[in-house]
Image 1: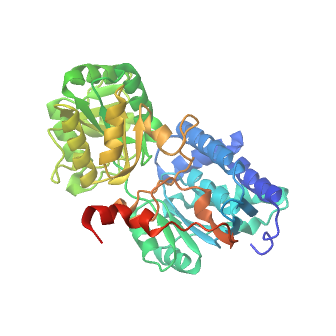
Image 2: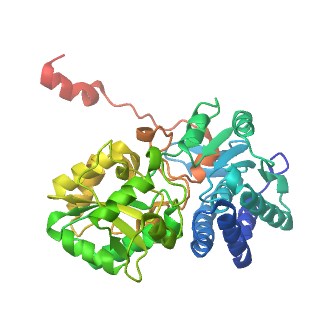
Length: 446
């Protein structure tokens, strides 16, 4: 960092671009995707290639539009000049679900702020993360930036080493298990963590059912549902319920029979915990595990449930190609069911709605304790930033104090810089007592 401290904005941007290219480069994107699936058994190679490239490209777009060196804002009307400064060495705790994309995404943001970053990956994803960091370091060297800006804990990564790193660094950014997030918040170091995903999505009376079905299917099946933004529950209004399920069937959804639903409930949560044999695995494994009889072209399974409940584990996140489906009497009932799902798990994270009734989307945003409400979008592709919405690209979604998080937005470059404020006097801005207290005096007296 000391070596990098005098870098110009152009030099910083060159370093960030180099890190981005290290995973975006087609042969590297493929190698890292193959290694990730081989190491963790989670997801699939084709979608991880897309994730490695799409997230990186979008994040680079966002970062190239930001200033992070020297003066980043000068407003003569307020007399304030803002200077960006590094936060320090960052500890990045990264998950097994994205052992390449998440570390590189965080490295790009950290280096854009002039920081160094050290990865503490999931043990099962270490070799993928280590290879990703090796590739990033090689690209940094090509542009004359210090390779040691980007590092990874040595193998084997232990809980003790990760916790020591959290204490030693200036900032912790923790993505992955809620245990790691809690450790980050109790480390004594400023920390940014994420909440658990468990996205419920409403299919409204006015939804374009075919469009909604195609988007939900594409989103649910992407990388075998590894994303925390993957749909976990559908709440379908009664008057379009059968039509919506039919559209979902045409898009690849298998509607489980009553007997199949019972087996799925039993085998997906043996002893109350998710069955690792089906977490983020291919659909043929899901079919085998649950003894399903599915039509050709099926890619995910839908299990109809009577209602969310603390004693019904299908209410929660499934990290697999399984969707819970609820029937709502009307929109008010759909909103109630969605809120109950979030109270069980996923509070703060996000919800989606497919509708042509803008007021219903507004109502959800006004009422529900979530950071993001996505309208008519494939949730996995829109929640972490998209080229057709205004959310910043990221693989780390803050969930606000609802989920015990310090941020209620997508992780972005603003979280990797400190700001120095140069303050000059301007014309006095002091209202009269009458302007501030007049209404109160008139209402209740002095």
